[in-house]
Image (cartoon, rainbow, N blue to C red; front, top):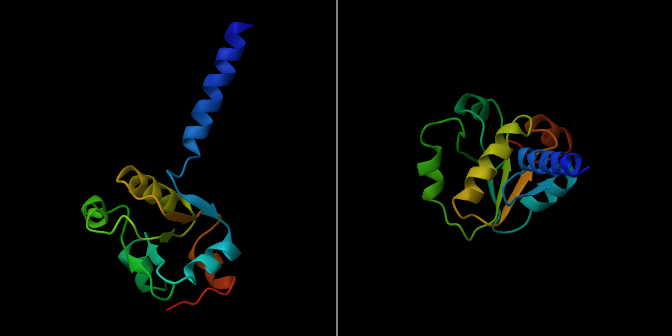
Length: 127
């Protein structure tokens, strides 16, 4: 019985760790769009520059999470600002907010229920 409980506990910890977004608040489209409309919130698109050039949320800055420079780029950001992070599907944004959380950012909002296409379809302003 103890082995079964230990295995269940270990599995729960493993699954929780895999679904973590660092210290970010995960959001659906409506909540994310409301959040990016708040004053002072910085919108961060973590897709590639090519994806960003093909269309992005209005006012977004592009910090490619897959680039070797991502960690140094986020180190130059103000850790006290609110950041709303999105990508194409929610995978890269989850990685990005994890890295940002590890770097000391505490006011993070992650659109992990889809990506740019879903936000645009839901009425987010695009450029």
